[in-house]
Image (spheres, rainbow, N blue to C red):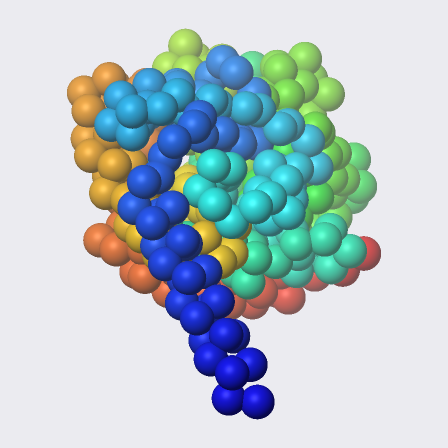
Length: 324
């Protein structure tokens, strides 16, 4: 019996030693970073230069692989099912915390199945309408919705995304009835607005900013805690509707599969933090109208994600969206 226990103990120590050695050698092959965003505008503006700089720091290629669809769930689903070795990472957003609440059958738990590495940035969303419309204030939109129940359409990047939740919350608090039109990607929402298929939408600033700058979209309000510098003359949704749950931060982070070795997580945290500070990445974030907001530690990001999950659970309840 003692011999058996001794052999098991030795085997365990050898396995632990092997894991530690592997983590210390990391990485020895290319790293894949899954992203729910398509190439082009928005987050891709800073994710691509980030992967270039991260590859330089890690000494291995970092491949940015788009997994578009299901409101951003496909990337997280693949990562959650991948080996916890640091070679498959995923971009994570607050949408990935909302989806399992709204759609329990979606198949993942971003809190339990991912090791959080760091947040990259944070920004608010904006409530926008085509500049050709006569709607100039949130109150105008609400009045029009009350006058035409079930006639106004709003778009989002999918069921359970932050843009869906914000608009559903507006319906609930303002006592109006409108129609949700989900798209495969947030990139598809603005073209639908400009075509006249939609009357309004909440959009992350990074997607809406280019169209706001060119005068194609008009901003009615933001979901920020205070008025952003770029939109100092635009009210916040909290100002208009007097509900602090309408302070809704959109953020982007990077995570790995659960049980990824701590040494690997810390190496990635260190190198991603340094890569994020590179001028090329900063230029991309500026173009996407987001601000750098990296975490102080992976543990801080994990705690932040847990708090965010609890907050969005309250928002889902208030919005009236039913779990499918």
